[in-house]
Length: 505
Image: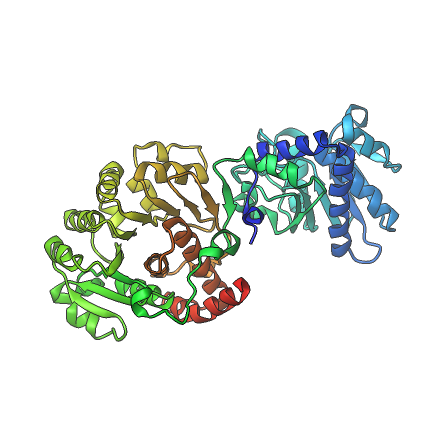
């Protein structure tokens, strides 16, 4: 697999691609013609026979793409109305040339009422928008959204920040979006992702060398999470495989009244392929855990000394702590022992909350033991853990938050949500949109921790294991759909894994 297929380009990096393509001999107008053609093709697929099109053009190159699409749609026999937010005489460069090739009328400025149409093409502003929409631009976007007419956005819905997904005052709600060369972070990050609708990626002929120039300008790399990113290292069984070659995960259990979360995590680790999984349980919770466990083993563990004794068995190569464990100093001490063992380490839920405002102390534990650690906070846990640090600064965006947290903690960060971000201390990051709101149910995150731990147990590096675990978790949710509860996620894993391994062949 070509990992470049998973790369995302920032707005600046995309500008480098265009500049490199033009410098390499591809005329800018040719790029615009290709972009407008891609938009027209998608519009034709959305339009009924003879359907009417309203194309809203802005004053820049995004508007130029719109003029190209207008010409092609008119040539295909569709009635086309073009509205330009600005003055036609003010267009210059390639956008001016594209406008000159349109022979129909152009209405200048936001109209008081939108004309009747079957499709609106939003070619107002692209991913590089750097200010909030106001005045007639804002009014026009609000009218589009209130019209109920399907919208096809060019590059990104107008009003969405291409780098952060933030809404600049107001944004067009698109049914579909056509973008070019590579997706931008704003296509995947919320709330922007929710405005894009179905996303289509089109090659406009910039060429491999220009793409490489853009990728070089986008370091450390940012990826769209998927098998292209981690599939090459995903665990596969051979004739020599057996349970002891597939790793042994240790999951720490909480007290008798809170054992379910650990069992969910343990089953996730086992279902994803760990050869053995053991729950380390307080003595008082042994009977409760034993009543629900079969393939998962059970060991007594009441305190940090007990955990230290368990970890003398070097076959226990990853520890998962947090789900249902309880908060406070006792949990902090267990985490310190687990981290000092230098194994794989996955921390979630109570393990993170127990270090509220003490991210640097947790980082010290991880560094002292050399643990290959993954932290999986949701937004609330993240805010508590990293309070007062550079990772919690306002206005820096979710990717930057996760990157700063990973660097500070010396651990992979899985910042969960509809747009989960996975970040490595080396700066690599991935955005995941392969999921469903049905995963927002009690215990779902516990299973995710188990999936990540089970993949680390099998030898995947922490970043790749975290990214793969997030994707598998999302795929299980997509396959199951309505009615999903956390117990369903491990039981869906055989179908998820079968399909993935077949695709990776």
